[in-house]
Image (cartoon, rainbow, N blue to C red; front, side, top):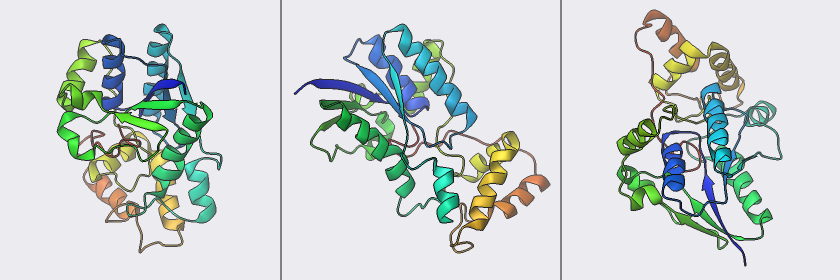
Length: 237
C-alpha cells in the first residue's frame, strides 16, 4: 500500500510551528489537511490562508475538508443544541470524521503529523485507526509551546491566534471577552445558540450564561482577552 505523510493543520501556534519544522528539516510531507467547521474565528481563516500560501511555495497542497452535514452552527441551530464538553460530538463530527473520511479516500497508509508540544505531552495519544500512524515531531524535538512561538518568529511568520470554534464550550472567560470585544456579531450568535438550546439553562457555553458575561464585560471593559489556550489535537492547535 502507498504511504502518505500528512500534516493535520489546526490553524494555531503548534501546527504552524510544526509546518515550519517539517519544511525546514525536509521531512516527508505530501500535503496538509484542515477541517473547517464553518465556525472558526476570522483570525483562524487568515492563518489557514497564510499557511496555504507558504506550503504552495514548497509545492505542498493544503486540503480543506468539511462535514457533509453543513456547518456546525447550522447543525446546532437545527437540533437546538450546543457543543458539549462531556461528549465532544462537535470535535468528532466536524473535525475527526471529515479528516478521516479524506484519509480513507486516499487509499494509502497515512502517517499523520499532529501538533502536540513537549510540555503538553499528556495530550499525546496513538491513532486508533489501523490505516493511520500518528507522529509527534514537536515532542520528538522536545519543543515546548514557547519554542513553537520562537520558531514562528524566527521564520518571520505571524504568530497565529488560537484556533477553535467561536462558540466552543471550552472557551475561557478571557477568550469570551476577546470575542465580545473583537467580534460582537459572533458573540451575539453564540449567545442566541446558547439561549435557544433545548437544554438551556441547564447546559451553557460557560459557567455563567453569555448574557450575564456580556453584562460583566460592559461593566468592566479592562483586559483584551486571550486566545492562547491549547486544547485537543484536532480542534485547537
